[in-house]
Image (cartoon, rainbow, N blue to C red; front, side, top):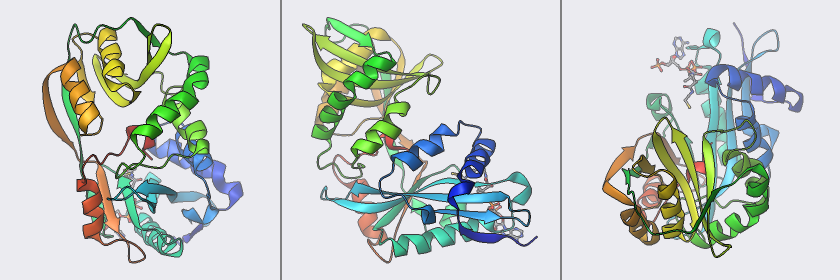
Length: 314
Ligand SMILES: CC(C)(COP(=O)(O)OP(=O)(O)OC[C@H]1O[C@@H](n2cnc3c(N)ncnc32)[C@H](O)[C@@H]1OP(=O)(O)O)[C@@H](O)C(=O)NCCC(=O)NCCS
């Protein structure tokens, strides 16, 4: 069957959201929040394959974003997301053609390098992406970490109210951190905020705020999966933020998806026993002729304190 490969038309966006919901089995908001939250978004960033009836059967979306390089300076990165083909249209090269189209778009947009997350690495290796694994730490929350007087799990209104303070804390920690996305105000509002749990979205996530004498000191974003806890982000006073989280879930198995860097190293030791490192193999990257070589991209991943924050996933 002949297919047309091209940029999506604005009126097809709702169809694309349905395709992604269908293929990935997750809510449309996930894809839409990145669309709305990304500054300088262009329709040409989203490539689609259309069948004879005008239906979208495959898509590859690009989120152009500023990400800090090895020295901490922001460079333009093409984050590849929403790669999907309807089951009945697979194995005809559509996704491959859309990845090639995406590479051309990255050249036109002068991107420095490209990043993606996947469980089907071989699909991307064919087009030049290489494995760029990340790592986390695993442990178990101690039963009595730092004594904390005020710990609360924020409700939706409180998350809104504290968002700008969380942003200030987070920015102070990430002002020059390699591999970290430079979050705009728009991105905080449209993409980060729902990823902290909002209404029916991410009901298994909590924002833990730690206060002392009525004054806020730090926050942690945690995700609960069965009995396990995953710490996705902390800001402000990391020792207090993690101690507060541990006081809510004493003895729980925990994954710390946090930078390998001084304040977190110390805070994790304070709140957790039996800490061990584990690889997270889902990340891939590639250099681009218009920007950095593969070697320079690898140097960003290897740089001291480099971190990709979970809430920046795409
Ligand atoms: C991964 C995915 C996007 C691939 O889409 P696709 O359009 O089938 O991709 P392609 O056709 O380019 O390549 C798929 C396979 O078909 C093969 N192929 C390409 N053209 C072909 C043709 N004309 N005839 C037969 N096979 C062909 C490719 O070599 C490839 O082989 P593989 O089995 O070794 O991977 C699709 O399977 C999908 O949506 N999966 C679920 C969501 C997902 O996993 N997304 C990616 C992770 S983020």
